[in-house]
Length: 87
Length: 87
Image (cartoon, rainbow over all chains, first blue to last red; front, top):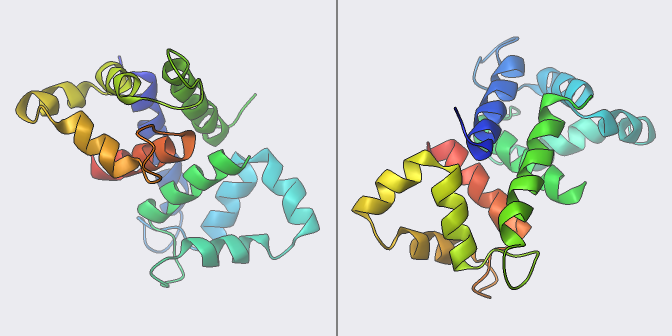
């Protein structure tokens, strides 16, 4: 039986792979996969994206520390951390 | 009904407050609270701590970016992110 913290860690891995495996590199989110993840997993994203259509581009640029136009698991976890603090 | 990602974010907040409110500043983890959180929430911590008794001190120093000897929510989320990538 996992603890709550272990559940959090397992869920982060599961959410990431659910979207990263859709196309291209199975271990990275491209822009389309990131957009789908945010739209489906974060209700507040949809209302913010209506006001700021470039939101996915901005998030992608902010996250993509190594500038390969994809978001790896490390970069994704940084996003979840930042969103949790910000929301 | 929250999504999986919203569940992750809610759980991180709930886990943090469950331990941070035990003593002193209700919104920060002191060393005792951090140790209790790691012992109860992370099974692997116990086996690592047996080999490295100073582990809590090391984690505390690494996390405590603003050097106030306490771990705030931002610093906690950084730890969860780092542990998820490392484990």
